[in-house]
Length: 306
Image (cartoon, rainbow, N blue to C red; front, side, top):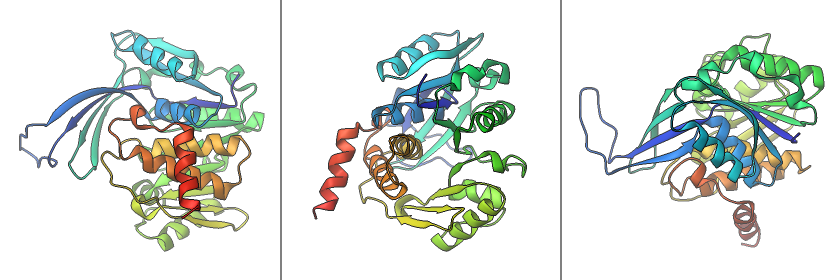
């Protein structure tokens, strides 16, 4: 099996570009609408694969016209799909609006993702895994089941709690690395997280409750890493002109997992992951915007020589 196993969502993304977001009751014409391969789980799998990782996907697609296409797309990216299940009904779908300033709003239809049960995830899927990636677009009980299996097998879990949710206290010790943005951090700790200082305080609180390391992404202000040993790292963002931020977080997480998996020090892994996310936001779409490893290497090395 693969070094990195992603258990999560597989979606079709319908992306509409608009000048600005509508207010309630308003109808706006969009500039264009495109369909892309997406889903936070699939996005992270593709990012890890493009970073050079050996990746397998565990998830579910529907028996509609989209399901087989999503599997073929993952296979074309080098992601193993033998553990992706077919569920009667629709494939998951995300309805995304992207404004002229590069921001986005997303409405999810779970589809087959909501039918991925703990019984669909067999222990053998993780026989040779070193890292498991999880998000919050599948059933919560399935995520917990995977975390418990990972603990039994000594496999590190990287969990991205998106969409945001409150994590039960007993689950936090099952998480090796928690990667979350400001909104997700606020939901979990119950107070504002809008600066590096507030992000550090939230991270330390989560570490005290059992998480071994926390990464809080702060958009154009970069990200903050803290761990149980007292190490704290601030990674500045690479300054670019954003076009579409849809896959920035997924790209960052997939790259971080692959870099850690290949033995890269945390400080360097954060740098490569941030560079990958910076490239991704300059392009439209989810998986279509994720850069290849050579592009990320060039960006990091160009900054080093300045």
